[in-house]
Length: 172
Image 1 (tube, rainbow, N blue to C red):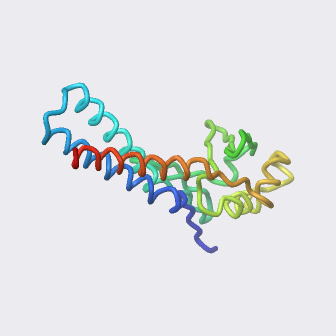
Image 2: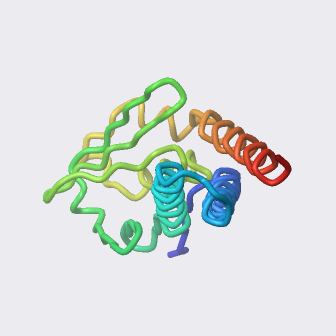
């Protein structure tokens, strides 16, 4: 069986990494200048949060190879196809979440993954259809997945704003 790995879209990870880098630079600049303590504290909190989200986005992956392996930041979960009892979907505007219900809990996959339609198709393909309930919305997402461009737009907008702030700090 072919091993398939699905990661968070590179088109989102790159601007998020740039945001983390720019926030760290802005935090460094605030410590080198005479910035107020509250500004430094806010920048440290923001840069820490964005760096953690960036690290999580880089580490997150779904591997299909005889089963389903979900890797997140510092944790990993392996599921057998027989463990999955129900597959559902929730659509909220441009965001789609696929809910995998198992005997021991549930797991959520979002359309932030690269090639989300192929991921959903692979999951449907490997599940015994006669034994597991698969909602129609899940099948629709496998055929024509909803694209989420709002996160991508927000990440690039944040990078532009951060560059502007760094420019004002350096040249004023």
